[in-house]
Length: 417
Ligand code: CAO
Image (cartoon, rainbow, N blue to C red):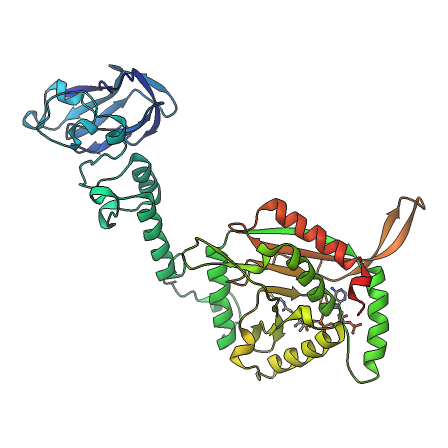
């Protein structure tokens, strides 16, 4: 039998509402108590359930549209007569059934009750929480509600998602079917090292769990390069070297001191930021076994020459696999420098639990227009990028950080001890 479902009396003097979601389409089967649509009025948000088992044969409404009491919503082909209810019942929104099935009044409950409807699944939750759960494909029935009278709150849903993410370190990886690449040509197998696997897992976790943004910039390091040449010549006398990396560490530290959120971590509940008052900088080192990130501690208390010596020491020991586990922990910010190799720009991946990482590319001589001299002059330009966790740092701060870093690298006197 074909029946028309119309918008019931919504109570509270609400004559019309806006359709925020239509959950059922033509041809779909519905069961009694399944939510058909979600409405928003200026007073409340409410779900309209079906009072029939049956198949939807026509949909008269669409999301974003307005509906008034008595407007036709759906045409439904009911399954059998015995399951059908009287028309007055059909016109009752779900909330009027929440507290008692005995209720015969077709008026809708007050706003507060409307907002925490219990529908056919026996779950007590607001339409907003239900909507979010539906969008994420989560069955609310399996989440224990901690709100009043066992209501499932938004926080319960968030905690559930967070726990699931932690259990699986992000999106679970599906088993992959083997592919016979030798069908198309010669191949050889190369075993992944332990370092490759550990680093790979960490990078994947970071990429999946941290919303990354990368901000690019460049610095005119012509003066800095001149000063580095002086230090380098001096250091060479004792068989040492001074590269750009110690300057980048020092410059980063000076900006981190001013922009403290970049030197922080989110706590385990993601409720607080833990701002660190020490400046331990992780340095990505390319080794034959894979990428390793040892940490140089207290960068604010060391000179450029001291940092150079320490870098030489830890990068050599990283390559020889002689680092102690402690030396790989505790960094507050990381630098990945590919400047000695090449490339123009890249987007590094944040090294958790840190919130930002600096990527440095190869500096090159470039013609830069000098406004005062009204001519192009050669300048040594270093391109760099900053990837950051967008939950902690907003775009404006990201742009300010790279700008400050550029100014710092251009102020050579800051590096002279
Ligand atoms: N622009 C121009 N030249 C640069 C430069 C830059 N941005 N950075 C380094 N150089 C120069 C150095 O000054 C040096 O030249 P000189 O001998 O004339 O001084 C030369 O390139 C080689 O430097 P280096 O790479 O040996 O030393 P470093 O301090 O810059 O870097 C280390 C040390 C350990 C970071 C580096 O050896 C390394 O392993 N880099 C790879 C890091 C990496 O893999 N990152 C990716 C992580 S994500 O996969």
